[in-house]
Length: 270
Image (cartoon, rainbow, N blue to C red; front, side, top):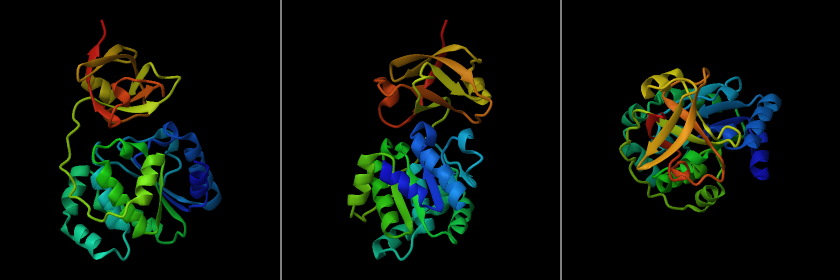
């Protein structure tokens, strides 16, 4: 991790993709802040959930739909690719970027803006978070990231070491089509590690309205026959309909299995 932190410190253009940052790695967040202070780095934050802790630091926020990371990875490849192989060029030509943009709710013009910010920079990195590691299409995303590493100026830095190793070792340019996006409607929770708040479920007023609950209510999260009790807390700095679900790192519940976002049923505890 120390090597990765040093790379971030030496970068003057940083894109964060699929990480809620401080809740994934405090050292990485601090390295980004230091890089901005010392090198006037451009910092672009890409995630379905805005993060109030870094709002004063990023120069651009690209919000995308939960589950659309595979499509976002192809948009990154299409945006930053330079002198690709014929195989990668044909792959990108066959993609309907307008459709992928619409499905992921991330505008093509947002990526054009990100590209413009990159042009005067000399040391550039893409920070890849653990949302990618747990995505059901991680194998294809790794191939896309490997192509991005090979055919762009972006250094690929994965928070998860196994994902980093897979990207570094990948030579397969037979990229697959982007799968149709599974819709995450209703009440969705996003798992973060936080020992101190592990009994809480933190969400916006909008989430409370959809879930039909109120601040400080005791609630059950129901998922595929499993349930977990939490206390719901409204955070006025959060927006949208995704709630943050802190857990302990030793947690063995459904929250740590598979993709970090879960579409759950919310039941008020009696």
